[in-house]
Length: 103
Image (tube, rainbow, N blue to C red; front, side, top):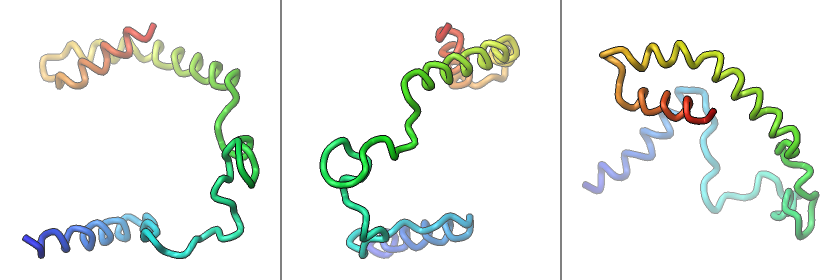
């Protein structure tokens, strides 16, 4: 049992490396950003405030949501037809119903 538990991280690391994904920094490892305050991106404390984060302003977010709704609405007829198929998975049907109810 202990061998199976210890084998799991190696398998995860191997699959991450095989996919070209960088391995996560181990807990307790030295900081990769030693000159950046821990509170960087926070509204309080040292470092730059929330403006450095890649979060759109509320007005831009509303526009993005509206654009997403238009695209979803344009694809909804096709999605509804696919959801009505006999072989459609129940999870897909639930997803399409959710999209339909977003209105």
